[in-house]
Length: 578
Image (tube, rainbow, N blue to C red; front, side, top):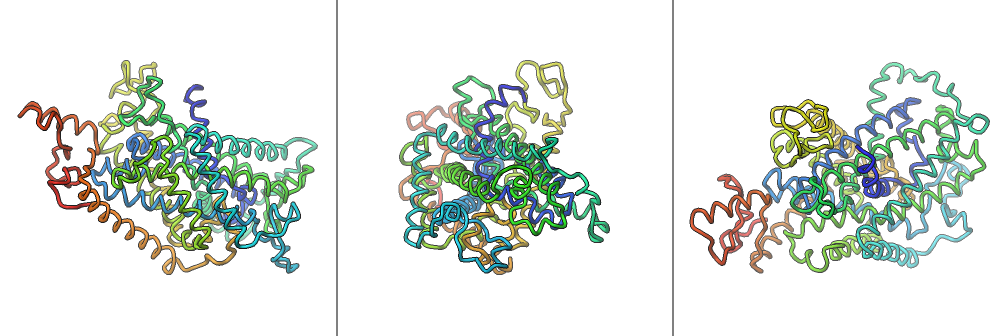
């Protein structure tokens, strides 16, 4: 990645960081260290590599999906089934709205922090925490909390109305500030005469008999848990602006989406997040011995406070509130873009301006505010992480299948960040004097390997998610501080909570597809072709055979596939079908 591409990737990368970061950053290494022991920093570093692979998959999917989005667009185009794409996008939408509702509820209650060990020992669980404790305020009442939750959602919506670029900056600037500020505080631990980093804290690396008996298994288990720290990082792919056509670039697809920029932004966000969480875990364990880690309420913040004149509680409150507000804006990007991509199935969503997509944004933030006011955020969280994990797996599998079976959808880019313009070809010549290994279809092997790793990462996330309760998985994300508004209310057997919840949510989505199909028939709305190339081919063939009809208009084609569904046929010629 050259310097120009890196600079262009900073803004979408900042959106991805904003969506993933939260006050939970200072609570690392948390549950990962309990299972992996002192090797927790290595677990976060490896998980960061896995997140980079998943980011590559979302970048590929963004280029394939175009304006329909990385989830719905890529799955629908690659599989030829809008229904499959819509159900995966519905799961993702539930996840994003659930997290937005959680943040709105948390901010509405003045961003309390989870109760520490001391609160249980001293019996002070009812005392205010977070900004209320720092400012000496009483926790707001129910009515005030609801009003504040609606206000922060309205504020985030207003920020998006300023335009895509300004909204991206509003999320990215605070995120990069948190990265730079916390990173600098952590790096001070290694300064001679300032920091108190003790390498001996990692000796022995396996202090318990369980760790010594299966060190590799402990590391693998730690990596699986550490992956949740990157939930939301894919938002960078949604934030990549459709400006390629204005620059005259060759990496912009037919819908005006810069696939390279989506991939670059996602990869930069994942790489930076991986380095930051690994550094956080390293410093926390290097200052606070692993055996004493459970006694630290906020491990990383307590470690920083041990060698710098910084109040751990004040630092945590500042990072939590800044990151929480940025996340409320950032998570609106993938949520609204996912909903806007479904507008062809639900025509009312397409009303109003396209940039920004006002109607989808209004629906998303109104839904989040409603969850908070109606006190049903806890129910929505049963599909939050599960919905995102499901969509991650769907996108990763689709991206890998596309690279292997439909490389034509990838355009000229074959996965090394360069194009084949000007001399590149299937022999691996990149046009710059270097070569890369290419398979029979012209897709570079490193891309396929990265996408295969993305499938493994997504499958791991899904496995842990659907075998755990929502409090556990949300507690592993960097938004764990927001769980302070629920404490233990989310604990549940997966078979009694998470799995039935996601099944019911998908059944609701399927029912909506049938309702919307009938609606489109009633208003005589037709679905555009999934693949512009197929449409152009069909149009040319029709004119060659019989000349243009109906004033030159041609009916959408299914690409000549006799087994394809009739979803793209005119409404008057087909039965209602989602």
